[in-house]
Image: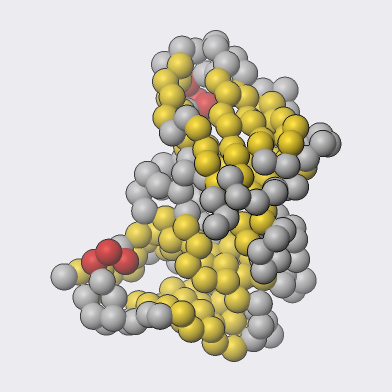
Length: 117
Length: 110
């Protein structure tokens, strides 16, 4: 149980275009999802916390107009990187909080490797 | 001071030995403590979580928590080459966002 599906696993886009990444909880309801970014040889950096039906909470320094987060249902959150630039190339990972588990479960998606050319 | 600190390594351990990974945290209100393993190019996978002082064992893995010292560790017994990965320590207050350390790169030498 507690599976989080993330798509696509990798994407290459041209500079200036937008890319949407989906994160789905397959067998549980996730009222809260988290979006992380990870650069090579660095740890995960939390970008934003996404709550179903409400606006996402962004971490300091993360541009909310550039990284659009939508959490329209209890099983789906999306991250859209708008007007992507090469410096946005990174590994993006979502995580869903499984409130049905032992109250401590945070399950990660498989990640999306974004390359902006 | 970083909220969660780990030695970035690399930590090199011979196969069959015990690997010891350490983590300290600054928020005394932290209530849950997690160890994740991350292979290169992959997302983190949960190894263990602990929330009470003392030891918690699961197979070859033992997590140790000392809230007074704000210290959590992970021991890996009978280390295998497949254990070679980056180990991430994460802490949080109940139901709140995870705060990650920078990770320790572990290499198990055959």
